[in-house]
Image (cartoon, rainbow, N blue to C red; front, side):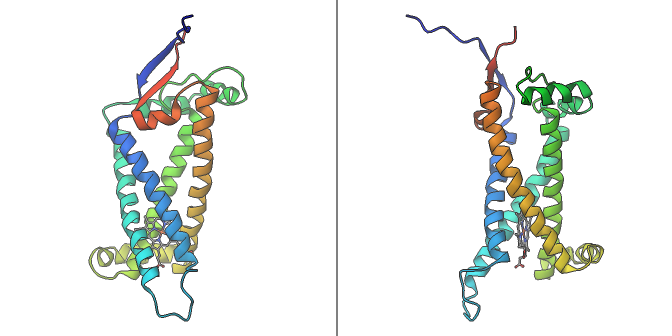
Amino acid sequence: MDTPTVPYERAFIFSAAIRIFHWLRALAILVLVITGFYIAWPFLVAPSSSDVLVQGWIRFAHIVFGFVLCAITVVRAYLFFFAKSDIERRSFKDVTSIKSWIVQLKSYLWMGHLDKKGVYGPLQFVTYLVISLIAALICITGLVLYANVYHLGLGGLMWEPAAWITAQMGGLAQVRIWHHYFTWVFVIFVVIHVYMAVWTGIRFKHNSVDSIVSGYDYHPKKH
Ligand code: HEM
């Protein structure tokens, strides 16, 4: 017996640049959370030990991936505004439409289906906007901490603005605490983000997780 063909259609949604930066950013965040928590609580070496290399290497990895994250944050903002495909920019139309919000929130409660103009729903768009702003803030506070440790080269160049930001935030301890709080925002975001990516794939019969690997979305044909 022939298997019935499911009426699915395929759409190209994520360019190679968007996919590469997504996974690079995921890797950077993973390394930064792990090394960052270690910097905050360096439990591997006894306080009396003179072995400071463990902390040094972990801090080195943190800073390398920190600069990677800074670069991606800038490039990704550029791509949002200037990429050839307007599929991300088009999603903004849904954010400004009350009807779109209602359709999306209802679809999460199993009432009706998603109907969006771009690639993200309005709640998803706002969530990504907030996490991008937090990424910018964690980069800025990270660079301020960096400028306070490395006084030559780039660190020296950033000294003046870093000192100004430190003063505005109420001292270096506050900068460090905020950098730490923002880390928790990322931890919470990643858990919800992965859950929602898998859940929407199942709920709306899309291949949402694989689309950020292949670039293609498969979804049931609209009648
Ligand atoms: C998702 C991104 C990031 C996460 C999750 C993260 C996490 C952390 C955490 C938890 C700490 C320890 C704070 C404490 O002492 O309680 C830390 C310290 C630090 N971070 Fe980040 N960070 C990120 C991005 C960056 C960036 C972009 C830079 C800049 C290049 C950076 C530079 C630093 C520096 C210089 C320190 C202090 C190191 C030290 O005191 O030895 N971080 N980070």
